[in-house]
Length: 344
Figure 1: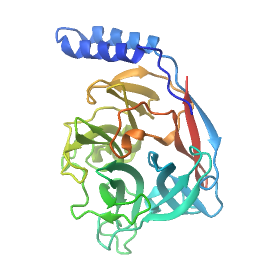
Figure 2: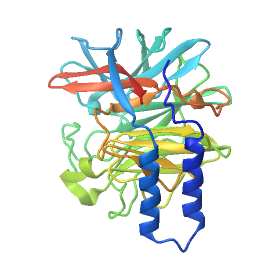
Figure 3: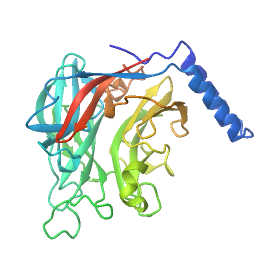
Figure 4: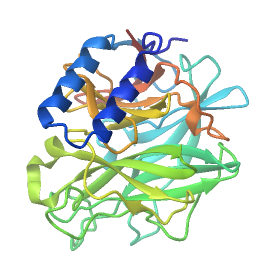
């Protein structure tokens, strides 16, 4: 098992620098930029390596993508993901499946479908995908993205357009990681903004969970309807808060990070770290809302990654995150999962 080994005391120094920047209101943007550059200089470079896996790796019958973070229950590792019939590679034609591992994610056994399509007419009646998981009060909360057939399409098919094919984030709950997962009555638990100019007025997706200050933080990515077909390259990350996993959730006012297509966050020594895929940066925040670039120009970063995160397990322990997870590889006609490690 490998860890992201910041040098001794370094992360605490980083947090202290950031808190100082927050506290001193008279500091200019130039001063803030200098502090951020100092942080980047002091932080060891994070690198990524990959290993093929069995069970949910490359498969001639099914494609798999957009996996959850990983949790461990009674010595067994669990991961959830989108599965499609080959050669379909898009998650917009998926259902949610899950697999288990006994050896830190090197070999997996697919266990079955975790969540099928919603009822006809529901927000998730065409596809359910990009799941993530949170264990709280001995219950398993699966957050996921859903879409329905394109409104007004006479054949009731999903067009994948950039005007009316909106998404929403739903929630299904179980007493056991093996299910069954039942949808909550107040689905969807997070919806797009009704203000066209907002960053999340067309798509919301990629839930990533954290418990902080005894509240549930649901990080997500958003896409604006104003960006049209250019939207995928302009997605931004934000967060919504709730006192209970079922909600109701209240959105943060505006985005937290630009160019953050897939959402990967984790807690570290009281702060929050996020990987932003489009601009290839590692970012850090002391309060979870104001992020600073910790590292830029990252290479070979994982696509749609999920980490093994003990924070998500029952009791939500505040311990360091082991530096391994599962990510996806996508090629023409193929989408499959691989294991990755973060090394420095």
